[in-house]
Amino acid sequence: MAEERIAILGDVHANIDALNAVVEDARAEAVTTFHCVGDVVGYNANPQECVDLIRSICTVVVRGNHDHYCSHNVSLSDFQPNAAIAIEWTRKQINEESVKWLANLPMTKTFFQQSFSIVHATLDMPEQWGYVFDAFDAAAHFTYQPTPLCFHGHTHIPAVFEKGGGGVSRYDAPPAGTRISLSFGRKYFINVGSVGQSRDGIPQASYAIYEPRSRIIEFRRVPYDVEAAAEKVRQAGLPQRLSDRLLVGK
Ligand code: ZN
Image (spheres, rainbow, N blue to C red):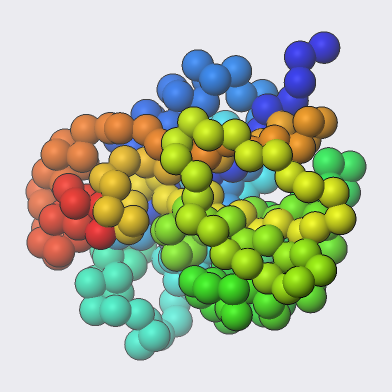
């Protein structure tokens, strides 16, 4: 039997052009299963299309902060103004059933058989939506990680956090197409980057493929029509900054 190949993707952020490109790439890469680390909606112009496609392909989806706030009528005072505007807009674009689905997404999921977990932000206090940028941020998370491996998103920066005998280290994600092999006896917290709103200066979609049997992870980058996606954001009347940032990946 062919080895299971699991696509882990997240921070889609209503960018259907980026999501379509990632799904096409994953199919060409013989991916057998899709899971999503959250933030299906928010920022960009096609939330309903992204909810529909994610629901049709993903086995498990965990809740991101944008999924939460787009499906709950609560204050947006914690958000940057542009993000808050996009959340208000998104609330009016998605149908009732999608709102219910987003509102009921689980915060975390552990796949005990394959020894990994997924979460949007961190496992120590997932509902606090903490950002893990450095090794110090990751240390609290690791004490709550039940499996050798956990995938997350939220910062939109693909990265590897590794916990061994000497403490926690952070590495930039290796170049796209590079396969990394997980060592036994260590724990890994892997940020798969963002499908729909890159922030590491590379204006391409980011995701990862995991092979549980051989314990190999491959980071992938997928070019897509960023100009078309940016134009949809402008046409929707969303803030200019949200369309501009797609072009530069920042
Ligand atoms: Zn996000």
